[in-house]
Length: 509
Image 1 (tube, helix red, strand yellow):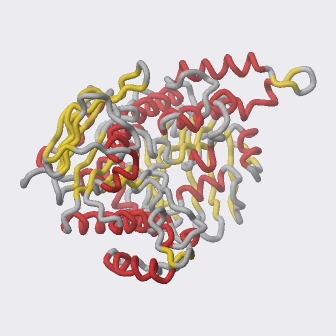
Image 2 (cartoon, rainbow, N blue to C red):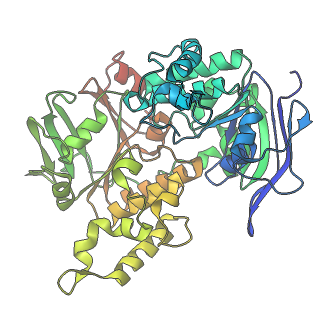
C-alpha cells in the first residue's frame, strides 16, 4: 500500500476517573474500507469522536493526516481536515430540502437571502454521481431511510471529505437499501476515499472490509487483513472467548412435547394481505424459530397472534383452548408476551427510568391503597432484573435511552418477564446489539425454555436460528413453506432453511 492517509497513535481518553481509551493505534489508507469492531463500550465511538473533533484526546495522543500531525479542534476542525462522520441516528433536518441540508452551516446567500437555486445547482452533480433518484429540491421528510443515508454521503462529498466514518449505517435500512448502499461504498472506495465502517454485523464486514481493527475495553486487540477475517477469530478478539460458547442451548424439550398439546397454536390464520392461512405450534420448554426472507410475513403473523392486527380467518389456541385476542393487552392477559423488533420506537420509553420501563406492564398488580404505586416493590423488581439479566447501568433510576443497545433490549425483556408469560414471542431479539450482549440474550432464552416457557423466535440471523432453536418453521410469500426439526442425525442447516425460504426444495422433517 501507499503511505497511510490517517494515523492515530497512542490515543487515550479519560472521563474523570474512567479510562475510555488506552493507547489505541489506528492506521487507515486511501481507497480502503476499514472495519472497526468491538462490543458496545469497547471505545469505537469515543475513538471516532476524537477523530471527528467532537472529543479532545488526552495529552500524548497523536493524529496524523498524510503524514503530518494535526490538532482537530471541534467538529468544524474535523470537517476542515477532510473528515466526515455519519452517525447511526442521522443528523438531517427533515423540514429542509436536500440542497439546504447539504449546505447546512455553509449556506450560500445573496443580498442577505438564501441563494437556493445556486445551492441546488451546486449539489446536482454530486447527486447524479451517487445515482440519487430524488432532486435537490426534495424535502428530506419525504425521503426513505436509504435516500436519507445518501444525502448524508452527498453532504460529506460536497465538503470534499477524504475520510468517511460510517456508524452502523444499515440499522434502519431494508435489505434492498443495504445492497444499494454497499454498491455505493465500493464505488467510493474505488474513487479513493478512506472509509471507516463500524458494524456489529459479520456478514457486512465479510462483504465490505479490506481490513478489520478490533477494540476491547478501550484497548487495541489487533487488526486483520482481508484474508484473515473469520467470524471465530473476530469474536474471540472482541470478547476474549471462543465462538463455540456463544449459542446457549442447554434446555431439553420434554420427550412428549410433540405428542402433547401445544401451549400455543395458530390455526389457519390470515389477514388477507401478507399472511395467507398459516398454522404453527409451540410447546412448553421449546424454542421454535420463525425464518424467511424479508417480506415473507413473519412479523405480520406475530401481529395477528397478539391481536396487533385483525385476522380475517383462523384462530389462536392456548393450551388447547380457543381464545379471542383483539389487542396486545388481551394477549398479555392470555399469557402471550411480544418483544417488538423496534425497541426504540415501539418498545421502550427512552426518557423514562429503567425502573419505570421494567414495571410498566405490572403497575396494576403493584398498586396499593386504591391505586397508589408501590415504589418499593417496583424498585426491588427492577434490581432483581438488573442482577438476573446482567443489565449494566449505574442504577435503576437512569433513563433507558442512555443504555447500550444490548442493555436496552434486556430492560425490555425484563418488562415482559415481569408478567410471567406462558408464551414469549421475540421479534429480532438481538438486532443492533453487540456480540457479548447477544450471548447473554441467548442464555436468557435458554433459561426461559428450561423453566417451561414456550418461546417463538423471529430472526433474520440464520446462525442465531440454528444455534438456539429446537425446530425452525420457514415462511415464504405469506405461507408456511415447511419446517425442520433438530435431531441427532439431522442437524439444522442454513442451506435447508434457505431452500424452503426460496422455494428450491420442500422439507418437513
